[in-house]
Structure formats: structure tokens, C-alpha cells
Image 1 (cartoon, rainbow, N blue to C red):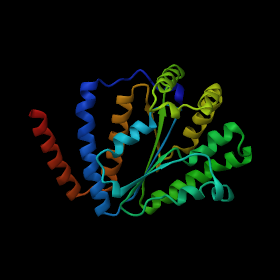
Image 2 (cartoon, helix red, strand yellow):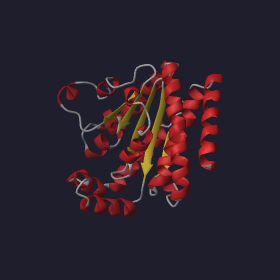
Image 3 (tube, rainbow, N blue to C red):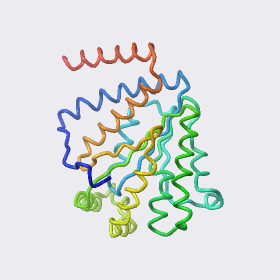
Length: 256
């Protein structure tokens, strides 16, 4: 599936600077409506190393009320997490009604990192496709909005970003030996990603593959997708009226 993605798509900065704040304002309104109507949302971000997950999450949450969302960075399981089923540590962070949880990496590590690096048996990661889809079905049946984003870049762009990180004293900590080792296994990871996209993109919780060679395009596409999903989930006369008022205010601001 990744081979069909057009990574040449770009968004001009002038368009980005208009679209981003407008979408952020819409998302803020929808965040409030979701709180009022007790609609929870879980948004998960996967992608290649240096694909821009952190920057996308930053723009997603930039104008939201911090009391209404939680960002959960996911690393290798530690301590008690090793003694439980792999989904246990994610259950703990699921949002209560009206709140959002944003996962920076997620339970899909089972069928990516753990598969490629041999941290679990083949039987375990093969079984995980069914476990994960059933898990997500439970969330949707509960009334939760589930958004799944995979940020896709090519090897040339990744190498460029690795170089930029290594030179930046504020971001160099992000570049680790693991990143370079993972890069050497690019083909293995690509095969694992293709399979997970095919087997876990469902009608109730579809994947959105984001063309992320251009960070501006990626951030706007993610916001557009989240806004559309929330509008669908909490559609009603109150939401329509509030968003209509927002559109009018944004139009006035655009005219100066």
C-alpha cells in the first residue's frame, strides 16, 4: 500500500498559514461540543522515525483546552507493563467521556517493532491483528471516535531529517542508535506496515495514510481528517450553528 502513495504532494506556506488556524479554531469548537455531549476520542499516530508525528500532534493540540486531552508517548513496555497483556497499558489511558487521548505510537507496535525485532513470537503478532480490530470495535461501539494516522516519508527525506536533527542542539536527543538500526531494516518494516494497513483498516476504524514528505501538507491533512470525523460523530443543530458562526468570524478576519 505504501508504494501507491504520492509523496510529491505539497502545500504552499501561504495556504498553510490560512488553513491551519482556521482548522484549529474549528477543532477547538468541536472539542468543546464533544465535551458537552460526552463524546470521547482516541487519536493514534504511527509513522517512520522523523516522519513528523510530534509536530503534527503539537499543531493538533495547540489551541485546545489542556484539561480536555492527554498526550501519551509510547515507548518499550517497562516494569508492570511486561507482566500484562500488551493492550493493558493502553486501556489505562483511554479517555473518559468528553475527553481526547492522543497516542504518540500505539498498540500497533505489536505488529511492527515487536514483529520485526523478534520481541514476540510469530504466533503472537499474527494473533494481534484480530485482537486489535476487536479492541477497536469495542471502542467504537462504546461511542468513541477512533482516528488512526500513519505518516509516510521516503528514505531520502528521512536521511535529510536525521541530518537536521543531529545538527540541532534542541532536537539531537531524538536521534538515537535505534533510529539508524531501524533504517537498516527499512524493507522489513515496510512489509510489516503494508500488512497491518491491509489487515486493520476497517470500516469502523480506517487508517489515514498521510503523505508526510511535506510537513505542511501532513499537518493540514490530519486536522482536516480529525475535524471531519468529529463533525460526523457529534453532528447536530447546535454544532452546525456554532461552526457557521466560526466560519463567519474567520471570513471577516480574512477580509481584514
